[in-house]
Amino acid sequence: MLIKAENISVTRNKKEILKNINIVINQKDFITILGPNGAGKSMLLKCLLGFYKPDNGSIIKSPGLKISYTPQDFTIDKSIPITALDFITLNKKIENKKITEISQEFKIEKILKQQLSTLSGGELQKILIVRSLVDNPNLLILDEPTQNLDVSGQLNFYKFLNQIYKDRNISILMVSHDLHMVMSSTKKVICLSNHICCSGEPSTITKDPEFANLFGHDFANMMSLYKHDINHNHIEESND
Image 1: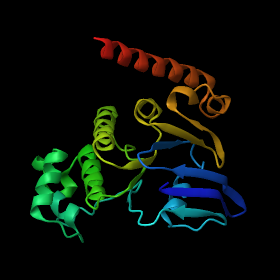
Image 2: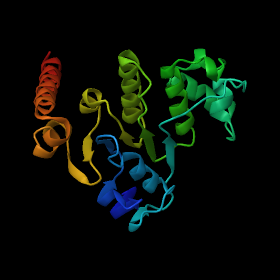
Image 3: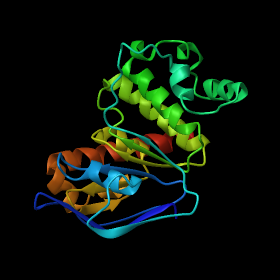
């Protein structure tokens, strides 16, 4: 177990933002939190990170847990000249050998010397993730990492994220609206609407009535077919 939330609740202005949330994140988990606007997704992350103390319940962390966090909104002051490399190493002591290894691993050699303000949305997200991984965290937490990316950028980002998950001994917790991408990437889905409505593997979650209530029956049916097609194609490819 890396981190556990036990019966946490948060109330603001007499409105219950989170109600009796229980989550356990283990080693090598890849969990995505889905839910409508105002569901409490970002608040849940803040509680897990220790940015906000819940009104009730507790957060339990394993000894020595290292968490890296990429926030939802990251704005660049274009008046500040800083390269991608300078940003990655900012306030961090990293040997040149380590920088070379990282740049080769994540294929970012070509953009390291570029100004951060000139990077595309996808390139910036990649740099943010690389900076997060420099300290070799046990858990990577991402809040809406692709909200400013087009479809092509989203596809590239999820390929990048899946490679990180595959190659490194790391757990990932992500908040996302990209349901199509999430269903083919994540290992577990948690549907949140101030409380946990349902949770489970992507292949089964779309059959849950609560999922249909949150996202609509037509969408749930479409996602079930989508997931079936993905699995069917993977089986065919493995038999070739």
